Amino acid sequence: MQILASLLAAAVPILFYLFILWKLDRYEPEPVGQVIKHFLWGAFGAVIFGIVVSSFFLNDNFYIYNSRNVTSTWAVVLIAPFVEEFGKGIFLLWSIKNDYFDNMTDGMVYGGAVGLGFGMTENFLYFLMYNNNFENWLSIVIIRSLFSATMHAIASATFGSMLAIGKFSLTKFKKFFLPFFGFSSAVVFHALWNYLVSSDFNYLIGISYMTILIITFLSVYRFSLLSEKKIIINELEEEIYKINFPREHLSIVSSSKKFRRNWINNTIRKKYVLLATKLAFRKYQAKHSRNLKREYYLTDVEKYRYELSEIIKEKIVN
Image (cartoon, helix red, strand yellow):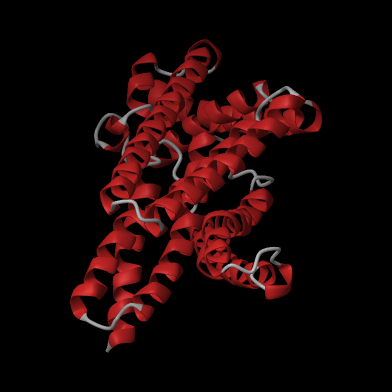
């Protein structure tokens, strides 16, 4: 019964967070399968990596100091944040090379998915450990579900977003500096949280810190979505003159109005919006890429433009 209760307490809120994170990406939602893959890496791969690598650093022969207090602080504030963020980030370093990982919002979604997966498994282990009485267990469930798991998500999302921005930066400095900055920020966010909850500070300080971090993350997420909206409008505005894209559709495709019925034939609505959105993002990506990658994106631009123009000719103009 305790195992089932701990499993449900760990999984239910995290899966809810994951759904909200994915759903908020309203302009070009990520493939569900890819989001789940990232989540599972965090839940299993990153956790196993963290346990194995941390065990090496926690070996008695590794420490210069023998003090138990120094060892504990070293493990919680320095080793755990670095090792765990590296373990979560490995998968992002691999997935950033794929075509579906193509903007800042994607980085936040995939990074957040990895972090939530890690947070779910870590929470489950904590809930099993602290089950000596119901009040203690419930307080751990609330604190870790609201803050610890979201910390993991925000830290990994920060790294993911910087990887995505770096991917479409035309300068080598930004391509290498932004991922480094993102990873360093993730480690710092993680380390500061661990320090606040493991030291003699009042829990309210840690909760205040996480509240600010969550608000900041949501603000950045909203900024990223607004940036995507601008990209869609700016890039599709050029198509008004190239393929006769209806000007009145600019404000529809770039907003929640696209989900409404009757503004276009409902049998083609989803495909029409998808093609228009992909065309806009591919044009933007082509402008921020070089060499073979740019040629690849330009090929996609021509493909999506042709398919969209055919729909406009057959279903809208006529």
